[in-house]
Length: 579
Image 1: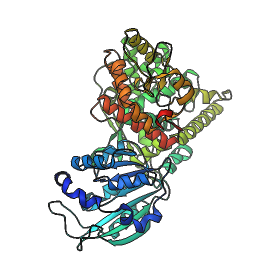
Image 2 (image 1 turned 120 degrees about the vertical axis):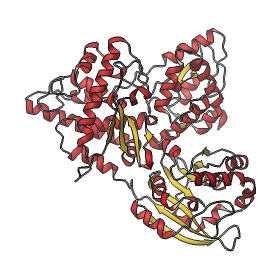
Image 3 (image 1 turned 120 degrees about the horizontal axis):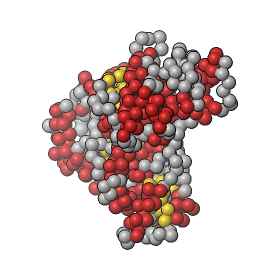
Image 4 (image 1 turned 180 degrees about the vertical axis):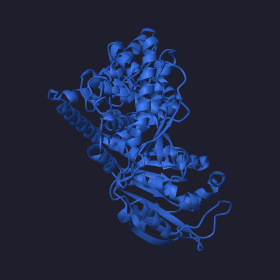
């Protein structure tokens, strides 16, 4: 690791010296031989520039119509890049190979990944991992472009030999197709330096994750609905609470998810099924024979606990807190013992999921934040499966529900039970939060009553008690989320007649940045009761790091907006005055 830090420090220290040389090179001329393989830019096209340096290539990519995520670990380079090329169409991330943990945490996939003059800095021992990290960021049909340097090392900067043969071997291992390989002289005029330029393509999802899911859902032996429940519980987290996952240690291509959160979703799914008396294994009615449905679960039934109450950030007290903790503990035990152990790769005894259990101390669960949910242990999800669940959740969810309802009816048929048409599907419907903006509205009215100035976040227009709405920044129709960070004041006309169910564009978000942050601080963070909830909800849903400042939360919201646009192609909206 220290060698990488030394390289970053060297570029940081030489940033001013290197800038003139780098900016004198034409990106188009440098990549001329692979240009036919580069996908055309345009609406919705996303490029990743790893080792973006002075921003030369990132700016060129924006000129082709791409939105660009530019990765640069050297602060000096980053500063110069922003000064020279601005930030319009470019999002900057401080990250580096071989891990790219921050980039992966954003959950985005890219049409084009560019690695220009970087591979020589990656140590040979780290290259298989680094290449895997790059490959798993590509969309189906996406292209990876790499430039490989040959020649003596730059003064004071560690470099390693490169070869096209190595990249071809790594490409075969990860299912990438080699499209073009070309040699070129150094654009900077150095006679002792030459380059190879390569373009590689991901022909399909390249991972086998979707066939794996399909095999478990449709082909795997199932003595109960437990395997389907485990897949669905994890898939819901991947799509709606991805920030709950952390990269697995030691560079493994996997993520670790709080086992308590998986168990929480598990309880949320089974409560309505048990209440409806729908069999979940042969001979089952109600809680009978369900290993997880013991004292805690039965208490939740008696209390009339609604599935929607079992969510990240919820709080409980008294006997209900004890019941939730007991039910979670039993569900976590059942998950670890049964479906996580027996969900295996095809023709193998190797489990798909890894489990590390913790003995939870304490008998209650008062606040279901991520720290609490980790206390039950962790479940390790393979990286390729996690990414598929994140990107293709809208396909995976219906497949799981369809098979689950079919299996339920099959159990009922064996028992001579009649299930009304649609009953199983109705019980399996995910209980979404009620679409309400009541908390945001109450807070806004209190602020206005105190004569606190309040403006439409999208236009800056002053708001009055009879002229404001509370808008879901990320539209409810595409991502049903009533978290506090997603509730913002907007003028009634803007909310009801202009923005409506569209996603704010990058320009709209950038223009609204200070007003959004100001609203969060006045409405939620200055309120001792709402501040913990705001932070819990943001930590569960948005790609935050260890810092939770309002600026960081805003950036994480903007990343989540970009991901929704990429994954669902939601129509975007920009206020008319900022087009």
